[in-house]
Amino acid sequence: MFPEYRDLITQLKTTDHHFIHLFDQHNALDQKIKNMEAHIEPGTHEEIEALKKEKLHLKDQLYAILRKASAAA
Image (cartoon, rainbow, N blue to C red; front, side, top):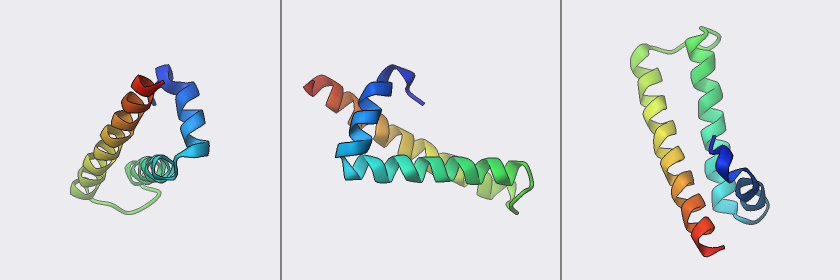
């Protein structure tokens, strides 16, 4: 996710608690979706789609933080 911001992500993961929280939530949702799609965890198509929308919303928030931090640097 966002390879162009790899260094900034590393920095924010050590200094920005809100960013860490969003990042961890995004990764947890990503794993849950993968598990549901692989039938490791139960989940309907509708539940998976809802989780994907939630994950995308988190990704948008992360991107906004990255852009703001990048512009400030």
